[in-house]
Length: 615
DNA sequence: ATAGGGTTAG
Image (cartoon, rainbow, N blue to C red; front, top):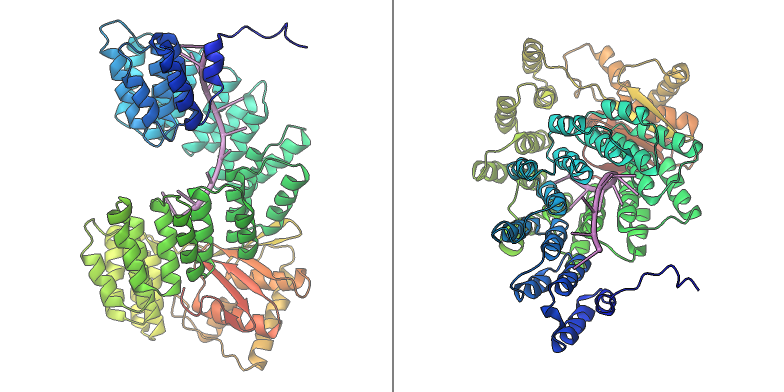
């Protein structure tokens, strides 16, 4: 019917285009060889491009085909650079670039070549090569090509060079929607979300991609509330909402611990039949797991048709964070059966799983296997996990020994993990060492001081406590204010320690008094040790009852119905007393309380906590 | 015959 619109295609081109998988393309290749057709450079170029672009993760075959050709076309070589720029081996792009350069002017790179090459550099995070490619493309006269320009903005953003982004963008005489969006995204990626917003507001036209870029920018900078409110504005303006928008929305909910809004987002996705991509599924898993609903996270996980390394790693990390170390390791076995190769992030999840399950030997084996089996060099994070693994198991000497034998300089994370273990296992001597090492590395690390002071307080060494206090004062180190958030009725309420500004504060105070009373009636004695400073007992009891999570829990008890779990997200680790008190509250008020602290989850129920006393 | 902007795990 619409044949009048179709353009006559070369029959061989049609044949080549009919194949997408390697198997199909190999059959087509045989056919073409038999007919001697591949001597025609244009057709060979088209074939190579088709093979490479349809199979960016398996480029051996396209390489072989290209090798059979004496004089590959620029089109074929550009296609190879393009395919490699998106592959797991982007560095090979340069081989084809060199082929072009060494062809004795038979070929010369064009705007396509440089556009793909710039994207390769972005992918590689090539801080040295990126600017060199930029120089080369200027020499060849392509710096004013709009595709190349937006590519450069993208590349410099990936390299974290915001000033170069500004320079390139500033030289675009009349930036269009696409380059403006690239710049919005670049500024946000480099942390200047304020400027990104200014640009966004100044854009004469904004399509749904521009909105997505801005919302993602807020989400990536940790400005989750702004991300959500901009999303609501987007809805009101009637802009098209896609699965890409929802990934950022879910990410914002994850960081806020806003389970209700996350559930709403999930329902929205289903109601509007948005495409359940791997990325979106992974964002859902992460949201449910980090909002404390690990069962739902796994339900989504098992429901997915396709899973990539992000999906597996998120699910494993979620299980570990919620205390299901054994389940995390089971999942790793299945991941291997599925032939998904783990990466360095996966090993962070694995080691955390071993740590919460107390599986020291197994953790050590996984750590060893990183380099030996997978060719992944352990990084600082992994060393930190290992110290935590030994420390949590109470094997403090081995933890110290591990630190002392690290091939790279131990970072604050390693000493911090040791210090934490020292507090849990009350090893003052090692704790003092770990704390001093931590301070040596970061003299403003408040955790180093607070933990040490708490250790002194644990052993009633009040001189030690005041000594730490003096040092902190002298060095201008301030304790990070504790902050807990709780979502009620789709709204996120924030409580800072000691802050009385909440409109319902009087009611909260009454609830806190009731909690204290019922705890005392149940025979619970408030432990005054964890307070940082040596203050009067009376005040201590009061100060303790004002830790932000207790205020949030009191608020939760007032505002939510019986039987509904109370979910809190805290910016610091839970203190010992709050942990004990929350256990008791969960029993006395018969309420499940789920606290996500800086490190992991605590599911309090019936007087017990899922962390079993170690966190 | 090829190209540009938005999304996930530590």
